[in-house]
Image 1: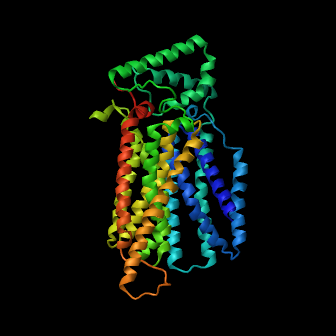
Image 2: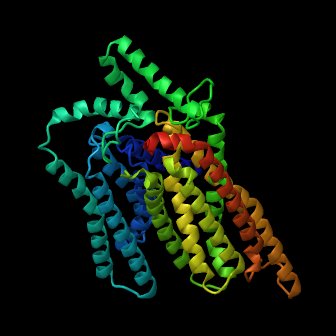
Image 3: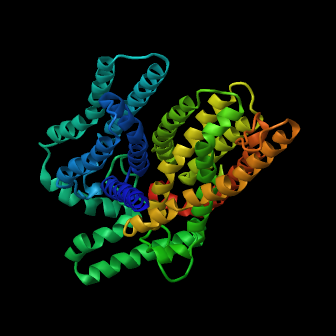
Length: 323
Length: 159
């Protein structure tokens, strides 16, 4: 039993990591929303599955666990062939923001719907057919986001494919030149950590001399900025913030441990509350403890979604072009 | 207006989430009427927000190449924190209060000890609230340290 639980939990972590990494790689400019939505659905999956469970309403636990074990792999294996890194910054579309807004709307609708269903199921004894209807509506809401990529690829199919090849180089130069006027908001700017990833593909096209010249230019700019006090330059070995770290390189960084302990204290206390919620509500004199459990899972979902959204707002707060 | 030419770093959002959670813990501690509802709201929102913000922050600070290993190491902090808070602090305080309440009345010693009233989790919640504040302070330190990174990533040079 212990081994099975161990394997099961590991499997979940693999899914989580794989989904997160490919999501962030495909949308490097909107990491907050991507991570928020992915983690949100990871949390909401439990509530959805429990709804499915009430629908099936079988007394046979073994078949339920079998379904839970097999269904995800059935879903994942065919999807595996569709998901690939698409070189996100080459494909940034102005419609990305609207797409995310639509997904947020669907998420909030879904959360509200699930909460309503939970409360109704708590208070009223429902017939089986109504529960089936609830679940069908639930899946209908779940499937709405699929139409977004279909719609976007239909609308943008007519654009010239050559554009996508030339954009990164253009964006590169604009990003390096602070004297130039700011690029449009949705312009193809490169994120620093991705410059490394892109180097082999783009820079190899240039002769070596040109490449060195560019790097030297960049360094000179950096030193100039450092002299003005805008950027602190620290001379030390290993990657700097924003570049690619390995785990061992990250383990010696203060930033990493700051995140770690901040997460330990913050989310550790949150998890403690969630674990002890039953006893807590009992000690405060409430009888129906499971209402709070389902409520906190919905709030948790909204927190994940909202955290992604608001952190993105904060990051972009001062970056609106000011004329 | 020192911050004007900076993009605000993402850890600001972590700090905000931790402040929200700290308020939520205070609601649990004092057990005011309706505290459970507001408490679950605040804690749920704050706890959830962590999960969205921390991976995004880590990916921005440490790159994507080894993101899987980094992210999962960070995830380790969550059960570790829960082990300390739940396993050591909360349970021992709960048991002590339950024993004290049991001493007052005639009680069957075989019965499971149950604690009643907001006192059971008062101290635990206050401690956790304090730790959330410390966590928010740590996040703000991180904010100070990572401002250059976020200026690079999202900021726009203004002339």
